[in-house]
Image (cartoon, rainbow, N blue to C red; front, side):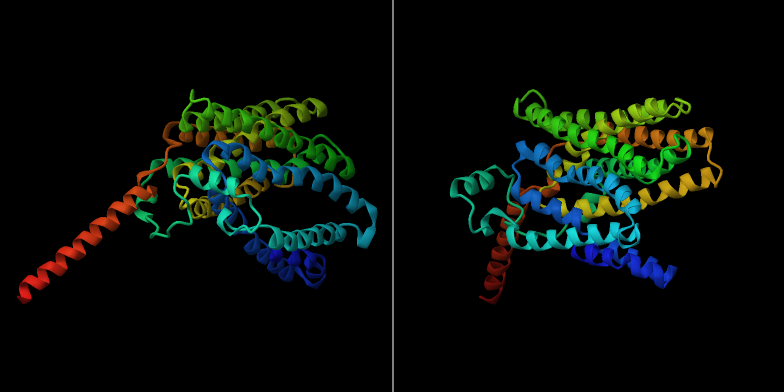
Length: 377
């Protein structure tokens, strides 16, 4: 985060130096941002009990939507303000805020309950006793073969890739669509473009309580809960994208449909997004780093595909194609998750298996020692 923020401050300067410098700075920003989500997942695995993961996961990850709600209109205002040249002020403000946040994070955040100096003893005992084997208890080798042959893992990966493709289509192309087709000016565009993400943030908070209630009530398993909530989170925006592509040039109807659909997308934070913690609390960070990497690569295809379709000649028909492709990807990936997803802890993550293996190894060592002694005698 610190690298991302500091190099964000350099974006306006690098833009003056040349295209190559700008690409280099943005690339380093991306490298700095890469570990954030996996590290967050690893920390959640050590801090959040299973029956609170939907709420806490949504609270943490929906912060991205809250940031979008603030950044989109603020960026429009800063770009129009003329401060520090207009658009450069966007990078100065957000880069500075990010750097300050990093300092606060280093001071107040601790890796796990056991290392926190001020946590109440009762709270620490509750967290540690509720976790399915603390992630910090041991660091066995990563069972890559078991992970890569695990359908629940692939279900998360496919859902994550579909989410990033659809989300990047909306995130990067929605302001352009609103300008080209709905004819909003840049200042108003920022405000209107933020509305769907405000809805997403609010809905993600509300649905997370529903998800945790479903699990805590005992009426729904982790698997069923994740699949239901994730279906809302991915089928919802798919339907809205299809509907919005047929609204013509009616700006407020289109904005309304997209706001509702993207709002439903908040369900993913209580769906596949926290599912890594369910199937493998010990390797949640590693699983997230894997799925997040491939999902971001899938997300890169979204603006590229949109650019190829629009090709400098925007029209309602071309934007309809962009939206329908994203909707189809949402639907296919969500369906794969419904079929193969799971909320149960996988055997390859079970500490009991590790204990049994250690006992077998110890027993084998004893037998080997006895055999050697008998041979010597």
